[in-house]
Length: 301
Image 1 (cartoon, helix red, strand yellow):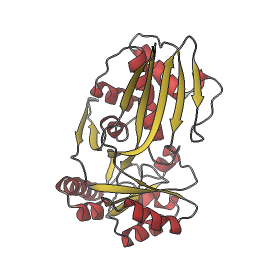
Image 2 (image 1 turned 135 degrees about the vertical axis):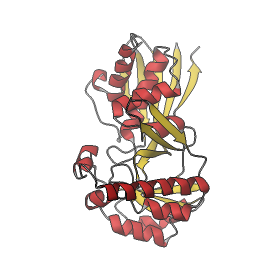
Image 3 (image 1 turned 90 degrees about the vertical axis):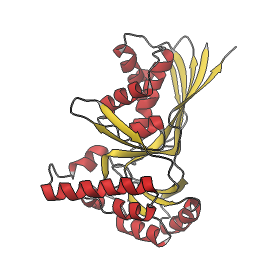
Protein backbone atom coordinates (compact mmCIF):
# COMPACT_ATOMS: atom_id res chain seq x y z
CA UNK A 1 0.00 0.00 0.00
CA UNK A 2 1.36 3.40 -0.99
CA UNK A 3 1.59 6.58 1.02
CA UNK A 4 2.84 9.72 -0.68
CA UNK A 5 2.52 13.49 -0.57
CA UNK A 6 1.95 15.82 -3.52
CA UNK A 7 3.37 19.30 -2.90
CA UNK A 8 2.27 22.05 -5.29
CA UNK A 9 3.45 25.68 -5.10
CA UNK A 10 1.38 28.82 -5.47
CA UNK A 11 2.01 31.06 -8.45
CA UNK A 12 1.69 34.59 -9.70
CA UNK A 13 0.92 35.34 -13.33
CA UNK A 14 1.06 38.17 -15.87
CA UNK A 15 3.76 40.06 -13.93
CA UNK A 16 2.51 43.25 -15.57
CA UNK A 17 2.83 43.08 -19.36
CA UNK A 18 3.34 39.30 -19.60
CA UNK A 19 -0.42 38.86 -19.92
CA UNK A 20 -1.52 35.19 -20.00
CA UNK A 21 2.06 34.13 -20.80
CA UNK A 22 4.37 34.91 -17.85
CA UNK A 23 4.19 33.19 -14.48
CA UNK A 24 6.29 32.48 -11.42
CA UNK A 25 6.11 29.84 -8.67
CA UNK A 26 6.04 31.07 -5.06
CA UNK A 27 6.65 29.37 -1.72
CA UNK A 28 3.09 28.97 -0.53
CA UNK A 29 1.89 25.38 -0.95
CA UNK A 30 -0.98 23.00 -1.44
CA UNK A 31 -0.04 19.64 0.11
CA UNK A 32 -2.05 16.49 -0.51
CA UNK A 33 -1.18 13.48 1.66
CA UNK A 34 -2.38 10.28 0.02
CA UNK A 35 -2.89 6.87 1.63
CA UNK A 36 -4.40 4.04 -0.38
CA UNK A 37 -7.30 2.32 1.36
CA UNK A 38 -10.49 0.42 0.50
CA UNK A 39 -12.83 3.43 0.32
CA UNK A 40 -12.52 7.09 -0.66
CA UNK A 41 -12.13 9.70 2.07
CA UNK A 42 -11.11 13.36 1.80
CA UNK A 43 -10.24 15.61 4.74
CA UNK A 44 -9.61 19.35 4.33
CA UNK A 45 -7.22 20.65 6.99
CA UNK A 46 -7.19 24.34 6.11
CA UNK A 47 -9.79 27.13 6.39
CA UNK A 48 -8.57 28.27 2.96
CA UNK A 49 -10.08 25.17 1.33
CA UNK A 50 -13.74 25.15 0.24
CA UNK A 51 -16.01 22.72 2.08
CA UNK A 52 -17.63 19.92 0.06
CA UNK A 53 -20.39 17.49 0.94
CA UNK A 54 -18.84 14.32 -0.48
CA UNK A 55 -15.51 13.29 -1.97
CA UNK A 56 -17.08 13.16 -5.45
CA UNK A 57 -17.69 16.92 -5.25
CA UNK A 58 -14.08 17.74 -4.41
CA UNK A 59 -12.31 19.59 -7.23
CA UNK A 60 -9.05 17.65 -6.89
CA UNK A 61 -10.91 14.34 -7.04
CA UNK A 62 -12.90 15.45 -10.09
CA UNK A 63 -9.73 16.46 -11.94
CA UNK A 64 -8.04 13.16 -11.04
CA UNK A 65 -11.08 11.18 -12.21
CA UNK A 66 -11.20 13.14 -15.47
CA UNK A 67 -7.53 12.40 -16.18
CA UNK A 68 -7.84 8.73 -15.24
CA UNK A 69 -10.81 8.29 -17.58
CA UNK A 70 -8.97 10.09 -20.37
CA UNK A 71 -6.37 7.32 -20.22
CA UNK A 72 -8.89 4.51 -19.77
CA UNK A 73 -7.98 3.93 -16.12
CA UNK A 74 -9.87 3.80 -12.83
CA UNK A 75 -8.68 5.59 -9.71
CA UNK A 76 -7.79 3.34 -6.80
CA UNK A 77 -9.54 4.39 -3.59
CA UNK A 78 -7.54 6.36 -1.06
CA UNK A 79 -7.67 8.85 1.76
CA UNK A 80 -6.62 12.43 0.99
CA UNK A 81 -5.55 14.80 3.77
CA UNK A 82 -5.28 18.24 2.19
CA UNK A 83 -3.43 21.23 3.61
CA UNK A 84 -3.09 24.64 1.97
CA UNK A 85 -1.79 28.12 2.68
CA UNK A 86 -2.78 29.40 -0.79
CA UNK A 87 -5.76 31.76 -0.49
CA UNK A 88 -8.68 31.18 -2.87
CA UNK A 89 -9.63 33.65 -5.61
CA UNK A 90 -6.84 36.07 -4.67
CA UNK A 91 -4.59 35.85 -7.73
CA UNK A 92 -2.07 33.35 -6.35
CA UNK A 93 -2.90 30.39 -8.55
CA UNK A 94 -5.08 28.34 -6.18
CA UNK A 95 -6.95 26.84 -9.15
CA UNK A 96 -3.76 25.93 -11.03
CA UNK A 97 -2.34 24.27 -7.92
CA UNK A 98 -5.49 22.20 -7.42
CA UNK A 99 -5.55 21.18 -11.10
CA UNK A 100 -1.94 19.97 -10.93
CA UNK A 101 -2.64 18.14 -7.66
CA UNK A 102 -5.49 16.30 -9.37
CA UNK A 103 -3.39 15.46 -12.43
CA UNK A 104 -0.54 14.17 -10.27
CA UNK A 105 -2.95 12.17 -8.12
CA UNK A 106 -4.18 10.35 -11.23
CA UNK A 107 -0.62 9.98 -12.47
CA UNK A 108 0.43 8.24 -9.25
CA UNK A 109 -2.67 6.14 -8.61
CA UNK A 110 -2.98 4.95 -12.20
CA UNK A 111 0.75 4.64 -12.99
CA UNK A 112 0.39 6.89 -16.05
CA UNK A 113 4.08 7.88 -16.23
CA UNK A 114 3.16 11.37 -17.42
CA UNK A 115 6.03 13.57 -18.56
CA UNK A 116 6.29 17.21 -17.49
CA UNK A 117 5.11 18.19 -20.97
CA UNK A 118 2.13 15.84 -20.65
CA UNK A 119 1.16 17.51 -17.38
CA UNK A 120 1.53 20.95 -18.95
CA UNK A 121 -0.76 20.03 -21.84
CA UNK A 122 -3.39 18.45 -19.60
CA UNK A 123 -3.36 21.34 -17.12
CA UNK A 124 -3.58 23.92 -19.89
CA UNK A 125 -6.59 22.15 -21.38
CA UNK A 126 -8.35 22.44 -18.02
CA UNK A 127 -7.18 25.95 -17.05
CA UNK A 128 -7.43 27.49 -20.53
CA UNK A 129 -3.91 28.96 -20.62
CA UNK A 130 -0.50 27.91 -19.28
CA UNK A 131 0.69 31.05 -17.45
CA UNK A 132 0.07 29.70 -13.93
CA UNK A 133 0.38 25.98 -14.53
CA UNK A 134 3.79 26.13 -16.27
CA UNK A 135 5.70 27.57 -13.27
CA UNK A 136 3.75 25.30 -10.91
CA UNK A 137 5.15 22.33 -12.86
CA UNK A 138 8.69 23.54 -13.58
CA UNK A 139 9.36 26.07 -10.80
CA UNK A 140 10.90 29.52 -11.16
CA UNK A 141 9.66 31.99 -13.77
CA UNK A 142 8.33 30.53 -17.00
CA UNK A 143 7.21 32.18 -20.24
CA UNK A 144 4.74 30.09 -22.22
CA UNK A 145 2.65 30.31 -25.37
CA UNK A 146 -0.08 28.19 -26.93
CA UNK A 147 0.36 28.03 -30.70
CA UNK A 148 -2.49 27.92 -33.22
CA UNK A 149 -2.16 24.11 -33.52
CA UNK A 150 -2.49 23.85 -29.71
CA UNK A 151 1.13 22.93 -29.06
CA UNK A 152 2.64 24.66 -26.03
CA UNK A 153 6.09 26.21 -26.04
CA UNK A 154 7.79 27.45 -22.89
CA UNK A 155 11.05 28.92 -21.60
CA UNK A 156 12.19 28.74 -18.00
CA UNK A 157 14.21 31.81 -17.03
CA UNK A 158 17.50 31.40 -15.17
CA UNK A 159 17.28 31.83 -11.40
CA UNK A 160 16.38 35.43 -10.64
CA UNK A 161 18.13 37.34 -7.86
CA UNK A 162 14.80 38.57 -6.52
CA UNK A 163 12.43 38.14 -3.61
CA UNK A 164 8.78 39.14 -3.50
CA UNK A 165 6.24 40.70 -1.16
CA UNK A 166 2.54 39.96 -1.59
CA UNK A 167 -0.36 42.08 -0.34
CA UNK A 168 -3.47 39.94 0.09
CA UNK A 169 -6.73 41.78 0.89
CA UNK A 170 -9.62 40.13 2.67
CA UNK A 171 -11.78 40.04 -0.45
CA UNK A 172 -12.10 37.64 -3.37
CA UNK A 173 -12.03 38.54 -7.06
CA UNK A 174 -12.97 35.92 -9.60
CA UNK A 175 -11.01 35.63 -12.82
CA UNK A 176 -14.27 36.00 -14.72
CA UNK A 177 -15.02 39.35 -13.06
CA UNK A 178 -11.46 40.57 -13.65
CA UNK A 179 -11.64 39.59 -17.33
CA UNK A 180 -15.00 41.26 -17.85
CA UNK A 181 -13.44 44.74 -17.64
CA UNK A 182 -10.85 44.07 -20.34
CA UNK A 183 -11.28 45.33 -23.92
CA UNK A 184 -12.05 42.80 -26.63
CA UNK A 185 -9.39 44.20 -28.95
CA UNK A 186 -6.49 46.65 -29.12
CA UNK A 187 -5.39 49.04 -31.83
CA UNK A 188 -2.22 48.18 -33.72
CA UNK A 189 -0.38 51.01 -31.97
CA UNK A 190 -1.43 49.83 -28.50
CA UNK A 191 -0.63 46.19 -29.30
CA UNK A 192 2.80 47.16 -30.61
CA UNK A 193 3.57 49.22 -27.50
CA UNK A 194 2.32 46.49 -25.17
CA UNK A 195 4.37 43.83 -26.95
CA UNK A 196 7.53 45.94 -26.82
CA UNK A 197 7.09 46.60 -23.09
CA UNK A 198 6.62 42.88 -22.41
CA UNK A 199 9.66 41.92 -24.51
CA UNK A 200 11.85 44.46 -22.76
CA UNK A 201 10.71 43.32 -19.31
CA UNK A 202 11.64 39.70 -20.06
CA UNK A 203 14.98 40.68 -21.61
CA UNK A 204 15.77 42.84 -18.57
CA UNK A 205 14.97 40.03 -16.15
CA UNK A 206 17.20 37.61 -18.03
CA UNK A 207 20.06 40.11 -18.13
CA UNK A 208 19.67 40.99 -14.44
CA UNK A 209 18.70 44.63 -15.02
CA UNK A 210 15.98 44.57 -12.38
CA UNK A 211 15.53 48.34 -12.28
CA UNK A 212 14.56 48.36 -15.94
CA UNK A 213 12.47 45.22 -15.51
CA UNK A 214 10.56 46.85 -12.65
CA UNK A 215 9.97 49.98 -14.70
CA UNK A 216 8.60 47.93 -17.60
CA UNK A 217 6.35 45.73 -15.48
CA UNK A 218 4.63 48.89 -14.23
CA UNK A 219 3.98 50.12 -17.81
CA UNK A 220 1.56 47.38 -18.82
CA UNK A 221 -1.05 48.22 -21.46
CA UNK A 222 -2.84 44.86 -21.69
CA UNK A 223 -4.76 44.61 -18.42
CA UNK A 224 -3.60 46.68 -15.42
CA UNK A 225 -5.10 50.01 -16.54
CA UNK A 226 -8.52 48.33 -16.73
CA UNK A 227 -8.28 46.26 -13.55
CA UNK A 228 -6.79 48.95 -11.32
CA UNK A 229 -10.22 50.18 -10.23
CA UNK A 230 -11.04 46.66 -8.96
CA UNK A 231 -7.93 46.49 -6.75
CA UNK A 232 -8.06 48.13 -3.29
CA UNK A 233 -5.20 50.56 -2.57
CA UNK A 234 -3.71 49.96 -6.02
CA UNK A 235 -1.75 53.22 -6.33
CA UNK A 236 -0.85 53.48 -2.66
CA UNK A 237 0.72 50.02 -2.57
CA UNK A 238 2.80 50.74 -5.68
CA UNK A 239 4.03 54.08 -4.33
CA UNK A 240 4.84 52.91 -0.80
CA UNK A 241 6.62 49.77 -2.03
CA UNK A 242 8.68 51.86 -4.45
CA UNK A 243 9.68 54.18 -1.60
CA UNK A 244 11.12 51.15 0.21
CA UNK A 245 13.21 49.97 -2.71
CA UNK A 246 10.89 47.65 -4.65
CA UNK A 247 11.82 47.33 -8.31
CA UNK A 248 8.19 47.09 -9.39
CA UNK A 249 4.73 46.26 -8.08
CA UNK A 250 1.92 44.71 -10.14
CA UNK A 251 -1.37 42.90 -9.84
CA UNK A 252 -0.83 39.21 -9.08
CA UNK A 253 -2.74 37.23 -11.68
CA UNK A 254 -6.25 38.62 -11.95
CA UNK A 255 -6.00 40.17 -8.45
CA UNK A 256 -6.97 41.39 -5.95
CA UNK A 257 -3.55 40.50 -4.49
CA UNK A 258 -0.64 42.70 -5.54
CA UNK A 259 2.98 41.64 -5.62
CA UNK A 260 6.26 43.56 -5.40
CA UNK A 261 9.56 42.32 -6.82
CA UNK A 262 12.32 43.39 -4.47
CA UNK A 263 16.09 42.95 -4.03
CA UNK A 264 17.16 39.57 -2.66
CA UNK A 265 17.14 39.63 1.13
CA UNK A 266 14.95 42.75 1.40
CA UNK A 267 11.54 41.05 1.43
CA UNK A 268 11.11 40.76 5.18
CA UNK A 269 12.08 44.39 5.81
CA UNK A 270 9.76 45.74 3.13
CA UNK A 271 6.92 43.46 4.24
CA UNK A 272 7.28 44.71 7.82
CA UNK A 273 7.00 48.32 6.65
CA UNK A 274 4.02 47.58 4.41
CA UNK A 275 2.16 45.74 7.18
CA UNK A 276 1.98 49.04 9.06
CA UNK A 277 0.38 50.66 6.01
CA UNK A 278 -2.01 47.77 5.36
CA UNK A 279 -3.18 46.58 8.77
CA UNK A 280 -6.21 44.76 7.32
CA UNK A 281 -4.12 42.85 4.73
CA UNK A 282 -2.07 39.70 4.90
CA UNK A 283 1.39 40.90 3.87
CA UNK A 284 3.95 38.15 3.26
CA UNK A 285 7.57 38.10 2.18
CA UNK A 286 7.87 35.18 -0.26
CA UNK A 287 10.67 33.66 -2.27
CA UNK A 288 10.58 32.12 -5.73
CA UNK A 289 9.98 28.37 -5.64
CA UNK A 290 12.60 26.85 -7.97
CA UNK A 291 11.49 23.21 -7.90
CA UNK A 292 7.80 23.19 -8.86
CA UNK A 293 5.50 20.24 -8.22
CA UNK A 294 7.05 17.50 -6.08
CA UNK A 295 5.98 14.00 -5.04
CA UNK A 296 7.40 12.51 -1.85
CA UNK A 297 7.01 8.75 -1.64
CA UNK A 298 6.71 6.85 1.65
CA UNK A 299 5.93 3.13 1.48
CA UNK A 300 3.82 1.78 4.31
CA UNK A 301 5.17 -1.53 5.59
